[in-house]
Image (tube, rainbow, N blue to C red; front, side, top):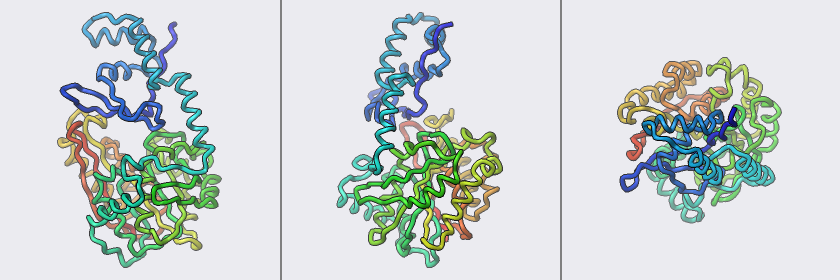
Length: 403
């Protein structure tokens, strides 16, 4: 039996767009092995989509012949294409594994997590960044709640897109002075386990923030079996980094430590995706988490950096986002009502009811938040849907304060 061809990497992001009448696919690689801005032709993407690790060259030939109306594709042509894909780090091959292991080892050996989006998603010059953040904060009223702020839900969408959402959330912290911030983010690149922790110091253009190492060690011990074996998922993840620059800006006169926690994709890690299975698997970790939150020694704020529905062809739907938006908005609002009232069972039931068909990427982080929140009440501050017209797709996001 012929040896199977290596599979295509599952951790790459593919974004369709049109340029001068040509349909192209932009490739994003959190490892940085595929150069920034790399685009491929749609036929090549179609070939790559056939590579699942079980197909042989003969299988690929047969599939391409069907696609091309019976036109034969030579095995040498396919071998040359596969060699090109391997050289470009698109395939899970020995060459890719060696490059990935080198990058992972280098990150593990470093005590600091450098900012990964400075100079791209936001200015990397401190003065320019402060000025930009001031402009964003001015988009929302500066009245902070009179009550103590326990937690925030903020977007993690591109800052230029979600400006009003970020401003609505972080204006609430004008009168806050937490000694410690728990940052719940979404592990977009995937990892083994339900959670990924790191005790690295986070660096941004506004300075460095240290981790609460004692609490992180406590969580690591309690979370054996549900925590990723390494912290590499944090290297290029934006969902925490974006929150951190706003926190540094709004709390600039106040020192704080952080507990960064990335939450993974639940259907991959649970036998069935429901709250009981979640608590059965993560119960010890969540109990330790609750104890950390309620620690009377350090005033603690929880921030969850999440987005809500992802709809349209870019996210696997067979129709444009505008045809799905009414139903996805209703789903988001139901989730937000459960979130604000801390109706955890209702939150899980709403997702089960629609079979997560609207791709709410922040579900895992919000599920964790609901399990560890102390008694408090939530209030919706902002809700918005951003449309990416080039792909006929859309992403919704929201801001919520808990007091």
